[in-house]
Image 1 (cartoon, helix red, strand yellow):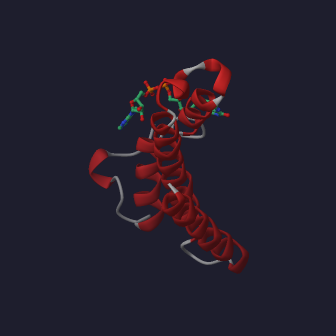
Image 2 (image 1 turned 60 degrees about the vertical axis):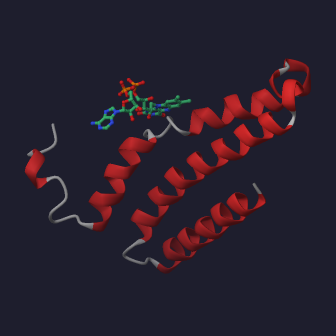
Length: 104
Ligand SMILES: Cc1cc2nc3c(=O)[nH]c(=O)nc-3n(C[C@H](O)[C@H](O)[C@H](O)COP(=O)(O)OP(=O)(O)OC[C@H]3O[C@@H](n4cnc5c(N)ncnc54)[C@H](O)[C@@H]3O)c2cc1C
């Protein structure tokens, strides 16, 4: 769990540096952070529920609330599936999606 959080923080810092520097990969890195952080934080919260055993799912302990809150980030501001499309598009703006035709 600590390793996942450290990896998420490292990628966030990388994206921050890219945005501050106006780097060409800044957009892709920002979407990567959104997708990766959403998935890893959800896993961390899932582990937290499991390691608390039965108490993990009891309302009184507040742990299940973390998992419910984390599930939001998989969907809001584009789902993780759509984020994957955005990453490919940011990395290959000239060619990504050409076989699927123009966006509606
Ligand atoms: C708390 C919260 C806040 C939000 N805030 C905003 C906001 O401010 N602005 C805004 O515009 N939207 C917002 N959304 C909507 C969010 O960005 C998603 O677009 C929306 O939840 C997905 O639409 P849907 O529920 O109709 O699911 P669907 O579009 O039916 O998707 C269901 C599942 O299918 C997948 N899927 C859908 N289309 C494809 C595809 N072409 N390829 C692969 N997989 C696909 C999705 O990833 C998802 O897992 C918010 C959502 C939440 C939960």
